[in-house]
Structure formats: structure tokens, C-alpha cells
Image 1 (cartoon, rainbow, N blue to C red):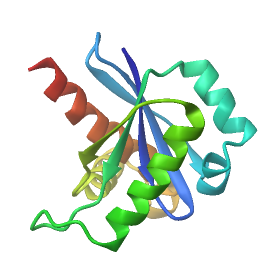
Image 2 (cartoon, helix red, strand yellow):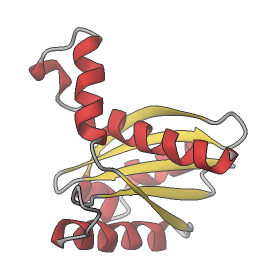
Image 3 (cartoon, one colour):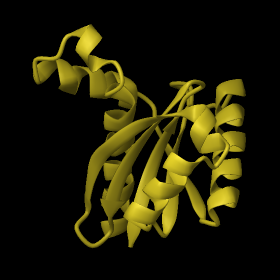
Image 4 (cartoon, helix red, strand yellow):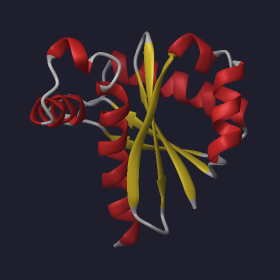
Length: 137
């Protein structure tokens, strides 16, 4: 099954692609949140290219596991995106995925400036990879 992972932010949405057959997630791109939320042309084209059967969205939780206002905002946005795309939706814990993405990009030699526009899709691939691993168990 083809799956897209979404790291939903207020301004940007990081997109990653993965497959339950391969168990591998890869970063795809970062898109303007306004385009994805409006079911814009570039988002629809991405859906056509990757043909996902499911959207997996990172849900921000506090370190204690509680869901706050940010999680509510992300859930509402994800449900809107999934409904417009006609796709089922699952949520996965995304705690520390952005920090891990930044650490990974630093190890690859990127500066803070070079990381802009990459962190969100790398973070999406990290939590999508976790989700894929859970599916294989």
C-alpha cells in the first residue's frame, strides 16, 4: 500500500512517501500549507503522482503524551485534507521528529540556513518510517 506522511505546520506541510511493501519512507517535498489545505493544483498533482491509499499525519503531543491546542489544529487540518483527497487518515505520534530531522541534516553537513524547507519533509519521513515499522510487526 502506498502511503503519504504529512507533517502539518501553520505555513508549510512536509510530505513523505512510503510503502508497506518495502517498509521504507522517503522525504518528498515541502509544500505551502495554504495550497494543500485548499486542495490546490500542486497538491492534487502530487496525489496523482504518488497514488496514495492512505494519509498518515503526525500529531504533536507534549512529552507527557497530552494533546493540546496544536494537536487539535493539526487534526482539524488533516481531516480537511483527507476529506478533500477522498483518502483515509491515520495519526502517529510525531514527538521529537523535527529535532531528529535537524540532527540528521546537521550530520549531513547542512547549515541552519540550508535546512530551511527540508526539515518538515525529513520529519514526515521519520514518523512515517516509524508507522511503517509498526505495520510490519
